[in-house]
Image 1 (cartoon, one colour):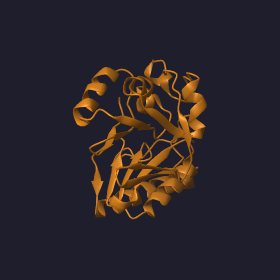
Image 2 (cartoon, rainbow, N blue to C red):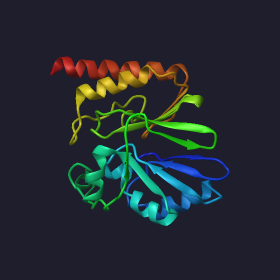
Image 3 (tube, rainbow, N blue to C red):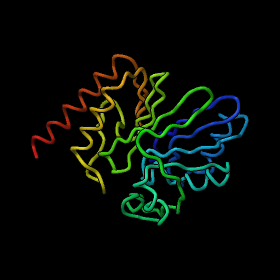
Image 4 (cartoon, rainbow, N blue to C red):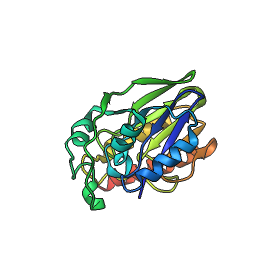
Length: 210
């Protein structure tokens, strides 16, 4: 049930993108430690508020003394133990109260000599954010793009079909070499545009049908 987690690291610090549920948070902590020998996980970035994406964020932030960042629309649901819009109720679980700092479209962080930029990509949720390392052509897409053959869902609280189509168009216009989805295999090179076009065709057909 846990979403993919992405670690960006150099020899001094690391950034974690998404944390998975709280079900496996101790195991997740051990796996993170095996990837960052310096142990300095200063930043946790959340693509959105859902329990399968953010459930372990509070625990990991406490253990690693990290700062959590998420889109402003996610802050109150994360902090208030909101069971509905975090979708924790779907997992028959409690969403741990999670304190995060707000980021908006265009926010930039740094890892080593590389900038990582937040791109607001609503549709799956109103707070959904993808993270771009422009110099490397890498986008961490979260549940905007679950897998090459699996379109993102828009039928959950704060989801929006038209916004999803527009966000998909936004990332298709980027010059990407690598697309990291939330659950499927990493997509590279020419396969990115092919996959994005299939998803766009699907959402266009859904909008036309409605």
